[in-house]
Length: 228
Length: 62
Image 1 (tube, each protein chain N blue to C red):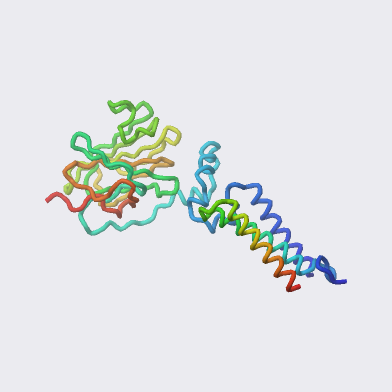
Image 2 (image 1 turned 60 degrees about the vertical axis):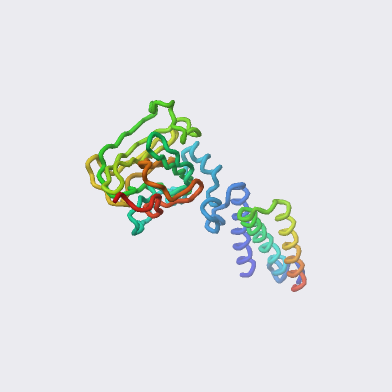
């Protein structure tokens, strides 16, 4: 009886070691649950999956998460996406607030303010914006596929949210139609394996986030207050 | 017959303990390596020390 129990325990441990060796340098499934998301699914492993198209189901569940968000009481604009602010350049009176999403960020975008969708402009592989393929904030991205959602808001005038992905991913879902009314923080769309969201704000609204700051869709204020 | 490796028709408990402990050490070392920025050699040295201390303790208990 003792020998049988020992054999069972040792066989499962042996299976664990074999799985560990086969999976190395990626974490073995037994250890994944103990690791934070970035360590559980390392970037190199995700890039391998992008090549072969075989994603870990648990990673896909994690990637497709869509948690509820509670917009703050301040009437300012809220961030349209989870991610890191990488730029807030101003061009021709428009501030381009660039939010970079990582593989581990939540990928559902939200409306920065209440308003009406006046245009949805998909731009495919051939997209050129007049300054070459990229704005300066996209210099590091070679072939962005963009969808620009223009929203008329009573609080901040005309805004736009650009959902940007690469040609490799090239899947952007925008859920409202032109003419639809959006609530502040309402779900706007989803970029599937994409990486950038740009919020276009009239320059006169000072922003309250800075480069390198982490923001959360529908919750982090990017401007304080609204038009009086 | 009772020995370190074999006892009354099954593996000796101390030997069995060393095997289980070694695998757990390996997995714990892997987690530490992934979660801390410490250099690999340092982690390896510490884990080796922990492993030796554990084995010595198990043998001493036996």
